[in-house]
Length: 111
Image (tube, rainbow, N blue to C red):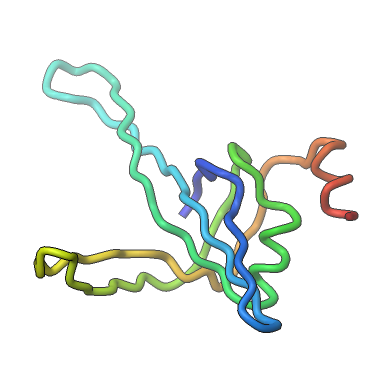
């Protein structure tokens, strides 16, 4: 999928392993019944683990155009009212930034 992060990644560390989470907006354009071009945005929950999370932490920023390849995972849980809920996320296998880094982003990656 190709889209833009809606936020800088949230990074958590468990022992020596990092986890990165962020949302990704993808857009689909189509014509409606009135022959007007409309854009619909879909939000996806993105998860990166280990070395991939370390790289995500350094270079992924809100609004940057990127491509993600991964697996869809759906988790089931019960909320406090005992109602079954579902949570779907994309586990990143590979990703690529499509736009160029600004000087600020390059400096953050060097830190």
